[in-house]
Image (cartoon, rainbow, N blue to C red; front, side, top):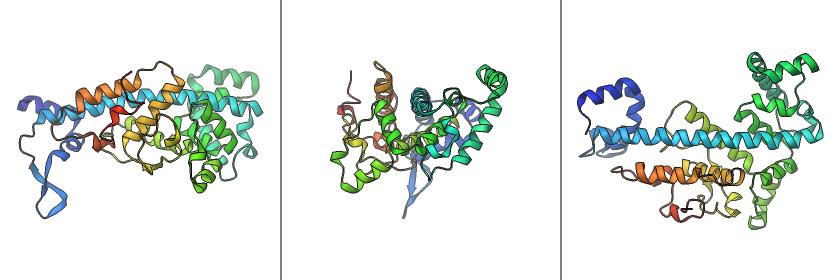
Length: 299
């Protein structure tokens, strides 16, 4: 158990409000008010337990950030190739995207990214001096955020979305979907919503916020559950971090053969989270037998 001096150090270094999010689950429910937790803690709760939960969440965020970074690089590359096949400047023409895509707003955001990157980007300065500042898609994507690239993917025509998804190793078997699910998937690839979901998760990690017991934007799982290794996703929709970690693990295994990322996540959970008193992997959306799923099985 931590002494008062160490506890005071943690409170100064992390902050009372941030750390309180990690001791909240250890507070007892108020009698006759099952939705409210009072000021009393569950017996035998220690400050050390709270700190260990905080450290687990911090390490999980680090792994998420590492995984999203590699997924982002892969998505940039494939989007660049598909858009660039038409024309290196095809991204400037709204006719190449779906009518519902707010192309003007996206371009406005892109111009802002380029302006901020100009000072330290040699490729941008090179194209400004040689080509009047017109950037081909493969240069442009290098200065965009994950959210910008995922929005561009969302705005692409369905045939291009499906092509990129399959290049990323996401092979949906739409014959296993209902008629309505198949129609919806053919109009817009389900991976577009998952990229939006991962963007929210990535931003949460970037702001050093809790991820272990948080709910994120719900995303449908029906289409991705038809893929080998992803049938462990929750039925219907996913909003807890388990679904995001599972989809990330699949994408990384497809784009980075030999990756040990999923095993690092599993090891962190088993060695750091599972031993915590009163905590259960269900809080993160993990099913009881998650280690037996092919994606998470020991390799």
